[in-house]
Image (tube, rainbow, N blue to C red; front, side, top):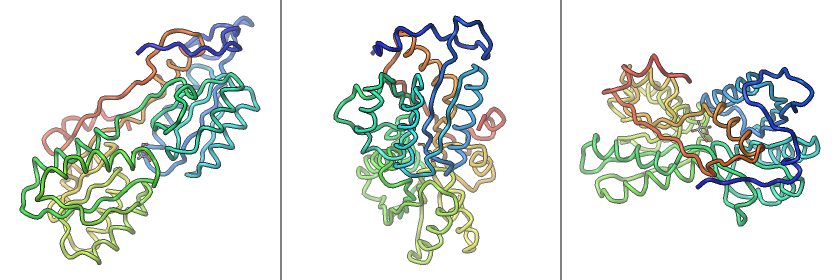
Length: 318
Ligand code: AHR
């Protein structure tokens, strides 16, 4: 659906030019954008920050970056500060799904559109944000599970799930999509499901304790590659072979995970692109210029395993 965001104060502003490199005459207004980022919990996240910062610099945007360090209250504070600074638009990658309405109402009252990037929110009022760009996390969970049911054989396959940040859209949705498929196959059973916060060190610690608790683990399903790579360290330290003794499936498709697939230590990775910079700023300019834009833009994610990872590895950008 094509949408126009109407913020009267912004419609009066001069037209924002894309690709202008920051120079320009006095008729041009330098775009001021605030970005409330989640933090730096994973390689995916730092690639996302990098993509946004590069694109902002390329376009000469006055870019105000704030890292939430994994805490919602930090992101709420950042949004308030962007409003106080009179930014033209706010980009938000929300740590968790709920609890955003009050601060988004403040941005709306100030006539500042909010673009959700990467993660969606639960809200009673869809008009509190102008648009969303990101992946379909439920589908990513389904893709991971479909690969598993097609490729892992056995009467009683025991799965441990390493979850992302509690309350975050990717943790909730990747679990939902995965379970939707697993529930249709009685030979697959999730025996543990715990959070490792999308962090490599937490993935390693959690896997260490799960290996002590369970003598038989057939599959690790990790909500991101960093947790899978941490789990691999724990599996190897326990004298087992990741990718052979235990099947490893994860999401993101960072370069290191590709290398692990090629080395036979990860069996399947589901792509989730962090490279939103160009798209996010194109969208921001359309919103601010009152041009039509798609309110919900969803990326197409691919699946990689031993059959196609080697051929793709050199072209990977994150
Ligand atoms: O929201 C995207 C997720 O957040 C990525 O899968 C994960 O690596 C990141 O921390």
